[in-house]
Length: 391
Image 1: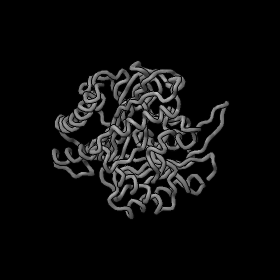
Image 2 (image 1 turned 90 degrees about the horizontal axis):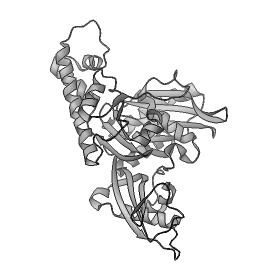
Image 3 (image 1 turned 180 degrees about the horizontal axis):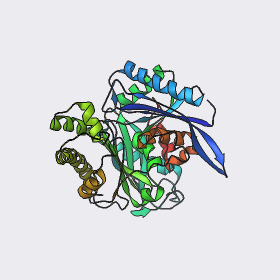
Image 4 (image 1 turned 135 degrees about the vertical axis):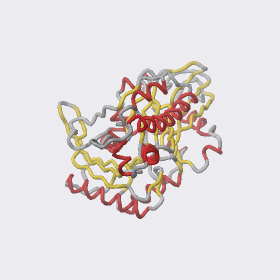
């Protein structure tokens, strides 16, 4: 693999997706071009976490083999997404006294205050968890908000409010080990909603404020953005499969038929449409109630001008936009995915995570994440590498 090539691997509960891309220079701008994709049915996974490493490794080898054949390159390294019910975000605040005699704020002060916010996370919340991304949401100098970086400013007290995106440590380690079994080195691990946001949300949407909701087969993950940065992440253990199961039970039909019915793939067969709509609406309402409760918890319910952006395998349900709008009292739309000039090789928004990983792999100094660095793979002291996450 050349330095201009990047691989993104999204290990989802429904499918494993692999995307190989290369950097193409056009008109003084570098953009990623997809040169190969591969996918396979996920086996050995439940709610996004690994139950059987051998089965997952087998599915992964199949998807990787397809991508290698299409791209004509051997995959040795990859950027990998982690999602599932183990993914979460916790917000914490820290305060320090400026160390220099002239009260000028330095890199060391910024590191110390983020350090302080990390130490304020309750032990009960932090146990068995690994910090993946560290996002300084807002700094204050002597109680006054700072817009941008506090470096070079003068004051006596520095405060920060920080979002720590975490995952269960055993899930993280299982993921890295499984990739190792297939002979692939993990370059970095990224929270799936962050990777997906790179191709589903525009900068104006992230600045104004919005929530990205990915309705997968077994989980719903949400990422809330404001001022062009993530301010909250949460995952719920419900998904499209629950809607399929409800349809199968409600209409007394096989699961496969229920899945096709949910996706609108069955034509010419008569089903009671009113009952079908009621079943789908009931389960989607449950999902949107969970999202609304989370937005209320962080004080953003009804207050995100760019509204809710829906993606994932179940975002194509006919009535989903109207239900989301009514439940959340926010503008609602299905994600229009920006795959650049790659429309022929990727099929839908479910590829956004894998392609987002490729973008990160090809971007210089992780500019795709607006200066937020990524978690290095297994090992390493969290405090020791906090400096690399500074804005």
